[in-house]
Amino acid sequence: MTNSLDAVSVITTKRDGGELSDAQIDWVVDAFTRGVVADEQMSALAMAILLRGMTRRETARWTEAMIASGTRMNFTDLPRPTVDKHSTGGVGDKITLPLAPLVAACGAAVPQLSGRGLGHTGGTLDKLESIPGWQADVSVPAMRAMLADPAIGAVICAAGADLAPADKRLYALRDVTGTVESIPLIASSIMSKKIAEGTAALVLDVKVGSGAFMKNRDDAHALATAMVELGRDAGVKTVALLTVMDTPLGRTAGNALEVAESVEVLAGGGPADVVELTLSLAREMVAQAGLTVDPADVLASGKAMDHWRAMVAAQGGDPDAALPVAKHSEVVRAPRSGVLTQLDAMGVGIAAWRLGAGRERQGEAVQAGAGIEMHAKPGDIVVEGQPLLTLHTDTPAAFERAIDALDGAYKISDTDDVKQPDLILARID
Ligand code: URA
Image 1 (spheres, rainbow, N blue to C red):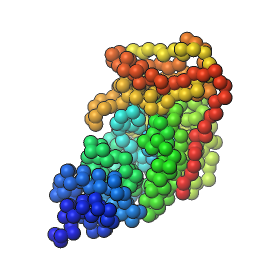
Image 2: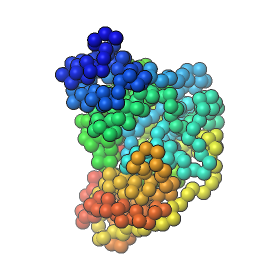
Image 3: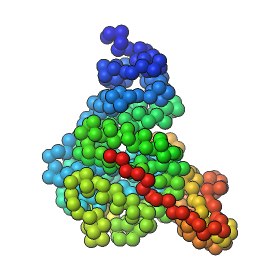
Image 4: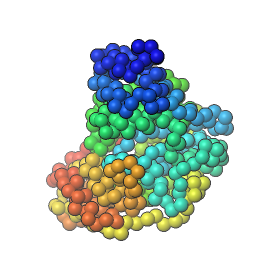
């Protein structure tokens, strides 16, 4: 080992504001994966990166090293173009559920490796696991068969242990060392998994607002730009939409509640914001895949619902089974008449999490039926005493803490001058 390739010199290079060489990055990520670089050394390096940043070259090399720590999947032999989407996460963000079968019904193959939720934003796998019988674990051959089947064409499943394993370990360290909020580390973490998953094209939904990871537009723009550049550098056609996350998406937050709302969208109904974002992302995905159909026509034809049913059934789920319902519910009523001018995504997200829809620590179980139904959204006129929210949980002791989280999360005013903000703020390609 040369002097430049030891953990302390890599850490001090970055600590002192230097640029890491390709050799330093390759070595440190590989040595961390092999257990040669200790957790405390990698944590120190993550903190140095958080404070000093990384150049575009360093971030691209870091991403490549993360990918090289595991297996890169390859779906280039499939008869249809592959395209996926990633959302940076928001409250009530169930868009993947209607989107993946819709884009499959448009003629693309959608390999969607997803995660479970942590904290106030729910995970896609947690939502789907509320469908009786549905299994998140799918072998690579079974995944390939689902993608190749023209009646299915989409798979939403858990990432295997061999998908960017260095990122899995590093993310767990960042979570407990105050080093999550680094744009190069977030961008490389997300993109290493998406590139390793083998998709040829990718659409990113980068959320900005109170319920999002990125609270302000400049940070969200910088993250989106970094991810688009990483995708491009790795040969994956990538585009990002910046979308608003100040209010929850749709009218539900919680696992089974969000599945039911997604099925409404696939049946041609559902809340306008969920339909709008699903169609906007679908149009981007279809274009990235080089297809020319209009996703709105495909949704209206019922074909997306057929693909949903086939996709759920292929993973052991019963698309006709009744979804779990929580044992207890409590209604929050409007304290006065007026116009609902605010329904804060973070407040609703934390309340749903406290009701049991989310987990505090990796590996904890979530309640399938827990969550919140929203009977009014900003801009709606409400009358004193009418139901505003219905809270659901299996553990009634959770109501008090959930109601605490909602304190100040909604506002009712006399004004009827509520501006509906655009859902899509910008497009970055
Ligand atoms: N999601 C990820 O996968 N990685 C991050 O660093 C942040 C969010």
